[in-house]
Image (cartoon, rainbow over all chains, first blue to last red):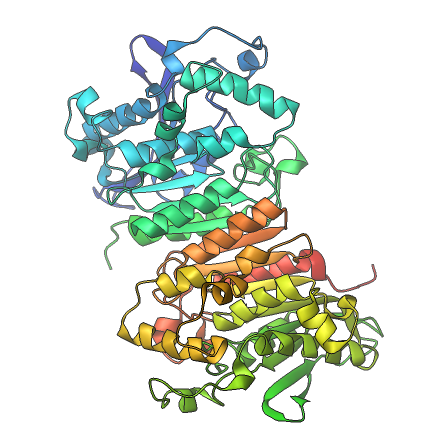
Length: 305
Length: 305
C-alpha cells in the first residue's frame, strides 16, 4: 500500500486526503481497476477523530479496495484544540455548511483525476462516515448531483457520483438531533457543533431542514448501508430508523443494522479503533463484516475465472 | 430431545403446541432450568407455514433452549386448504382476533404448568414469529399484561410475561400494510387474511389501530429483535423501521437488522427451511447468528465455572 497525503486546497492546510493506494501487479489485478472508499471520521464538525480514521481506512484497504481518509473542514484542527474552546467561540467560516460536504466533492475530483495512475474504478467509489462524518456523507449522498456541488466546481455531476454510502450512527435529522435530551456535556458539544456547522448557536428551521438528509432522498441517492446502536445517548437512533423508512419510501436499496448495546462512536468496535474497553464489543463489531458482504455485491473485484 | 404434541383446547383440533424438550443429565445442566422459545410461523392467519415451523424450532433447540412450535388459530387447517379458498369465504370465528394472540397465552400457561417437569426457566421464555406469526408475537408482546389475556384466562399477568420477542418481517402497522401497493396475488391474499383475522374484508379504523402493535408499545413490552429485508414486496419494510423508532421512543431495548436482498418469507434463509433456491441467501441467513448472540445476553444457560 502506498500512502500519501494531499492538501485539497492551497489555503486550507487542515483539509487533507490521505490515500492508501493498493499497488497492482500481475499477481493481483494485472492492470484492472479497483473500487475505492472515502472515509469521513466523526467529531461534531469540531475536528476529525482519529478512532474513525486510519483504522477504518486500513479495514477497507484490507478488503481489497483503495482507501482514502478525508480530513474535511472542521472548526478546530484537532480533538485537543476542540476541547479547549470557550462556550461561545467566534464563527469559523471555513467549517460552515456547505464546506464539509464540498470537501467530499473535491476528493471525488482528485480520485477522477488520478484514476488512471492509481487504477481506480471511478464508477465504484463509496463514502463511509461516522457520526458527523456520517452526516457529511449522507448530505453528500443526497446533494452530489445538485448545483451546490457540481455547479460550484464547474464539473459535470458524473464526476461526483458516489456508488454507495456507509453511514455509522449518523445524524440524519437535525430537528430530532437538536430536540434530543442530552446530558450537559452533550448539550455543550452540540452548542459548539452548531457554531461550527451552521455558524450560529441557534440555526433556523430552514437551516435544519437543509441539513437533514432524510428529507432530501431521491432516485439519485446511492444505495445506503446504515448502522447504529440503540443505546447511543448522543445521536438518538430514531434518526437511523427514520432514514431507513425514507429510503424504503423512495425505493433506494438499503441495509440497516441497529445493535442493542454500545455507546456512541464505537467505530470498528474492536481493539484496532479503541482507546478503552468500552469501545470494544464483539456484537457491534459485526457491522464491519456485514458492510463488507453488502459492499461486495456491488464492489466485487474484476477477477478472471 | 423429546418431542410431543399437545392440543391446547379440546374443541380446537388445529391449535397444537409441539414441544422440543432438551433432556437434562449430569452431563448438561444437572437439574438446572433452561430458557425456552415459542415459535409462531407465518401464513397470513390462513394457515401456519411449515417453512417457519420445525426448522426454526430445531435451530433454537440447537442453541440449548427448549423450543415450542405453536400452531395458533388460523382460518384453514393447512396451506393446501388455504390455497383453494373462494375469494369471499365465510368468517371462521376461531381465527378472528384476539384468538391467535390468546393461543400464545395458553402456551405460556402450559409451559408454566410443566416448568418443573420440563426444567423450564419461566422467567426466560421468548416468542419468535414470522410475518403474520411475527404480528401475532408483536401483538402478544404489547398485550400480555392486558385484560384481553390475563383476565380472559383468570391468571395473574406474571404467568404470561415474555422475556424477549424475535420478529421476522412482521406486520406491525396494519394501516401501512393495507395501504401497500401489492400485486394481484398479494391483494387477494390480504383480502382473505382480513376475513381470517378481522372477520371482514374491510376492517374499521379502530380494528386496524388495535391490530397495529407499534401503537401499543409500553414499558412492559419486552426487548425486541427485529429483522426484515428491504426487498420484501409483501410486507413493506417501513413497518419494521417504524417499529424500531417507536421502541426507541419508549426506551424498550431492541436490535434491528434489515438486509437489502431477499424476498418475503426467507425464514432461516438456509437450506433447512427452503423449498427453492430463492429462499436461500447467505447474507440474510446471518440473522440467525445475530439473534442467537442477542438472545444469549439474556438467555445464557446457568453453567457453573
